[in-house]
Picture (cartoon, rainbow, N blue to C red):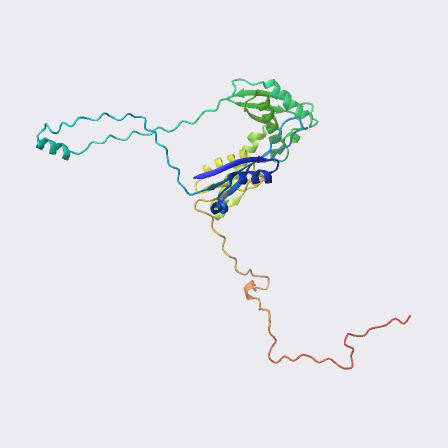
Length: 323
């Protein structure tokens, strides 16, 4: 059974220490304790809004299987009166030897996923004004925003001439703006609402690029039998890679690392093949690495050290300046 605790702290180190302290694992399970960072700490913007402490999780497995709790609400049937005494013994033996009929098991119904409640309507004008205020801080004055809301998701399409500043390196700035806007809408509406910010059709282009990268590198993995590791990505981009790899036979994907270094690895089904060792490569003279003469570490048997000449100074000629 998994025993876990979740704690928060100003830094990731404090959150990890607090989670392990709350877990208070026995000594025999100290080596089996695992910990991970769930959320990085975030500073407040201008010291007014936003910001959150770091969140960490610590857990261990005590090896005890959790017993399922069975609730039997059915009433026990009333005991039938024993009328065997009134029946002849031959009929009693026939009933005793008759095969018992078992009822077919009823198929279990799959549990339906719970639907999260989301607001029926939100203040789109507030979302648009908030986004324009952020963009204005990036020295962009010609921006316009179109907003829509459907099933708990606010979609904002930003239009401007220089949208490269808004996107940033690999969409880092756009993701940060989207995160800030989601925090502001949660505080304004009093409920969690998903926010999607797009500019210049960047999301669609990025998805297509990621899918092409997944197909290209999956072909490399199938051809060479070796694994391929992507650069660190955010959860949304990793999900696009995993979805694209699932459509290709013979390869599988998984995520490694944690926090900002989380990345996707593609490898053949059943594991990657270790590359064979290279033999000594041939140089221009036709001699390989293994054909080189070995260095001598012992002096030959007929070796005799040279004697110093008495007529020569030991350290060469040394001139002394008489001035």
